[in-house]
Amino acid sequence: MIRDEEKYIQAVEFRKRGFTYSEIAKICGISKGTASAWLSKKAFSKKVKQDNVKQAARDNVKRIALLNKARSSERKTRYAEAVRSAATEFKHYKTAPLFVAGLMLYISHGDMSDSSRIRLTTQNKDAHRIFIRFLKEYCGVENKQIAFWVLLYDGMNEQSEMKWWSRQSKFPIAHFGKTQFIQQKSNKKILHHGTGNTIIGDTVLKMKLICWIELMSKEL
Image (cartoon, rainbow, N blue to C red; front, top):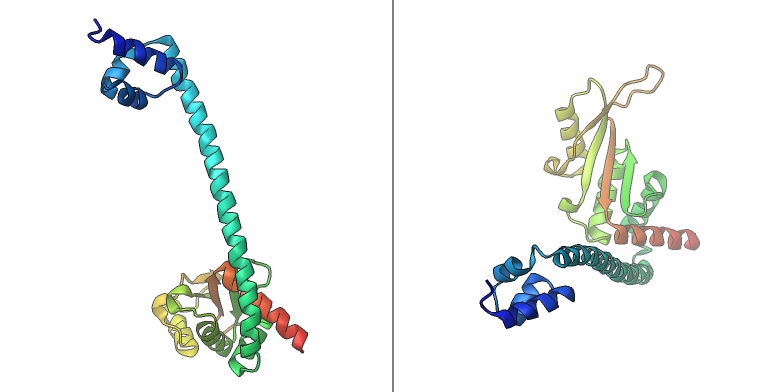
């Protein structure tokens, strides 16, 4: 038996129009539990629930699309600003030995294909030491942003090689990533200390670095 017939009739009408139990409870001045008890077993109410679920899914897709659009616009603004600032900074940095050295090292040993990651790969210890200094001084990078890992051949002592790379590159061993191992091919020259990899995952910094390299190439 329904005690408040008027509220019950209102609840039924609002449910038929697609309102949720929470919305009906607020409008009719009843609890959500009461709204559910009155309406949940109604055939039309079950259909409304299904329709609401579908609508919520559609709304969520639209929300995600709008969010992605906003993020895309924000990224484009950040990237454009990075290119503009890179051009301005280049004018001030282009005669600095460390700046030029950092760019030349990346031209020689850097990954140019990945748009979101700076990666210098070489067996040369001094190249890593200089490039890390370049990153800190001209890119504002801190040790915690840098990933450094070593590629070694099977059988090489990981701990001693990591200590060697840390001493030579002046980069803290505490920030080293996981060492990778490969098999030594008999016809290949032995790398006494393996190959070092200096990596930073930052799309904006990578854009600036590429921009600096392009500007330097035009200057030469």
